[in-house]
Length: 472
Image (cartoon, rainbow, N blue to C red; front, side):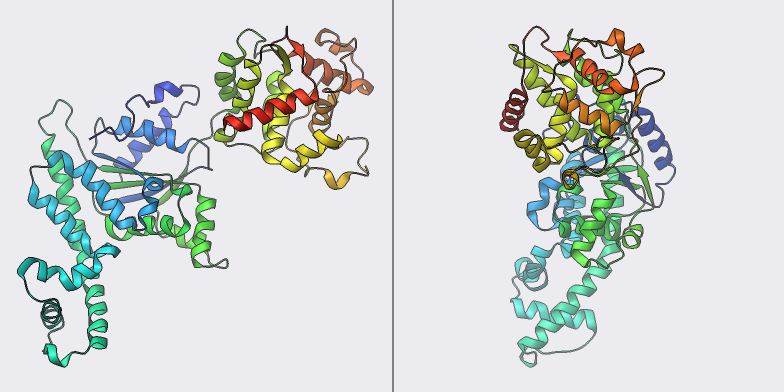
């Protein structure tokens, strides 16, 4: 069987994000909670690196523990969560003990009552398949045995058969949960026993990492967590379900109605919720951009990171997946060696195009600015302005001159159509408050991709961002 997770996915490859200490702490904590079974919700917003974390953690955990990785998105098409989970357990936990055919068979036998698509064959045709008994007769025999009543086949009309079959199905499911969980325990025992003599023996608990639930259909996502809680939550098993908890609550409301208390509902399924720590945006940008920018400029240069980090913060773009798409736009601009691009305006335009496409088009086509000037709040085009965000630290040009960040963003866009004049970084220390714009122009002009190329116009930036869209 091919590797479930690429072997090269390790925490050592992501040292700047530095999530290995968190993984070690989580492992130590969960090892103490597993005796009776434990289900934890690993919360992080979409694009925050949950998959990378889980895959690195999988490779770490599997050195010492039986470990299962379940990609919920890959099985979303199956429309049967229980079937997908049982198949995953068979492929990753039962395969290494393939010689124990009876135990593997019992996994399917005991789990089959909970698989929707198999219900008709189980409740009507199962005995016929095994013994040759006619379908109706097998159903009547099961009814007589389960309910302790005597009903002759000729006395049982179709309507009564359907009712009794549904009741029989429900009873078999309820009674089968304990049997199914006992099979899981035996399966884990057999797995641990198989590796007992290995150089690195496996030990309890069994870890089950469930990923990509955010991308699934709402009904399927709910079925996954309900199946885990009702059927798989048993001793010596730890389930880690990675979700964007806020998004999962929307999924619950999509299934049960907008007024449904999704928070209370989900709290019944998880013993604890932990939040994946966010990496430093500054460190992430340095690690991704340094190899791209090469020798064009240094990232410890004045104002540069303050501007770049501030742009993402002001627009509330915290998803590393979305930030990385902006970085891909920078890569494309860098590859156009004949043109020189200012990195700060390029990042700002890329963020605008992704988050506020209509606002971006208004600026490109009609020079309508989406940012307020701090001294001109009552502008005629105020209905085009983006919502305020006062949580980003102002830019400190010098000891006496500070620019509110939104005002600085406005100047960043103006710099695409205005020259820098005589101002440069060396003269910023004496820049007066009335010349804030010149300070931003100088900062933007200093940090260029391909500085020896021909300076790109506003239209040139737009063409690069449109080209980047084709690459996606």
